[in-house]
Length: 254
Image (cartoon, rainbow, N blue to C red; front, side):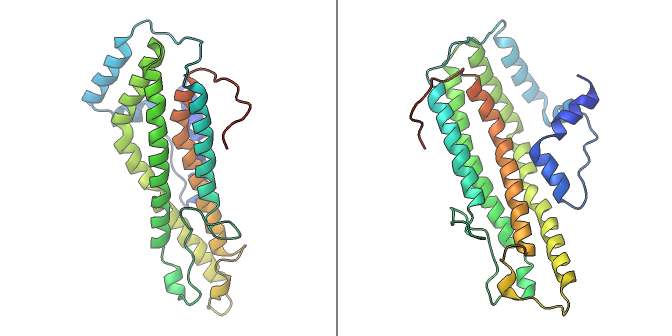
């Protein structure tokens, strides 16, 4: 695979694409993925990964399904559905209130307080914590199941654990930057809204109405959160797929 093709592949991630479209200043991706990954791994990390890769020479993956495959596939589907619902059913614009309610200004709020991004920053971080807690537990379950499988599955479990240990701090820091990027979008939406006002005043009753600037920003936030959910699901989906096909369940759990 050429270097150019590597960049094209990784840049198609939904989270990267949506952030590029959302922020005012597009993100520059003119770098080699392998080179950047090498900068994230220190000498100890490299030794650990090398030990895992070389510790099971000739390991193969058996075609037979792991006994836990069906249950974990069901758990994955439930987690995806529940977390997606928590993001899209946020208690505003006609949706039922979920675990975390999208902030909206009070009717008596001033224009200055409505322009404060802090509540939205806290909202996004709360959603991230829920994603991390739910999916972290599911990832551990999938890894534990693989560790009880054949040699190839055991090696995959060890590799995933090694990569997570090496990259989790970097990943956490990068994902923590997402609400900072959204703050720029929030400010842009609000400034455009103020510029459209004829007399320079706000009508608080319309701040949360469909079609308002806040409604548009809510849609921006949901899109980014759903893309982050998809990104966080990728390693778990791969681990569960490595367990093999699950047995057909005529009565899947809701």
